[in-house]
Image 1: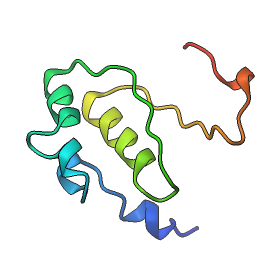
Image 2: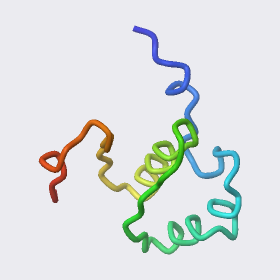
Image 3: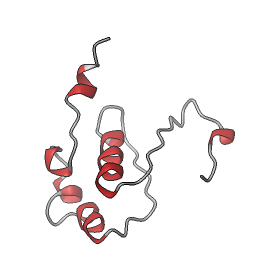
Image 4: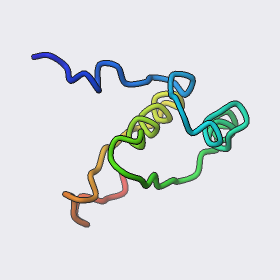
Length: 83
């Protein structure tokens, strides 16, 4: 089966991402936190299609973190658990 276009061309690094320079640019706080390897818990909020999941995935891959995708709209409390 063919991979969806959005998945096929999804950015894989912070440098691949476009926009939000104030957050992920060379002097952005997210980039600085990633470089220091001291990333706090974060909640990304915004309209669909703005790169929230992509940014979370890029961070998890760069820092070799486990990545669990959760859709708050369709998930209840039972799906939230500490691993």
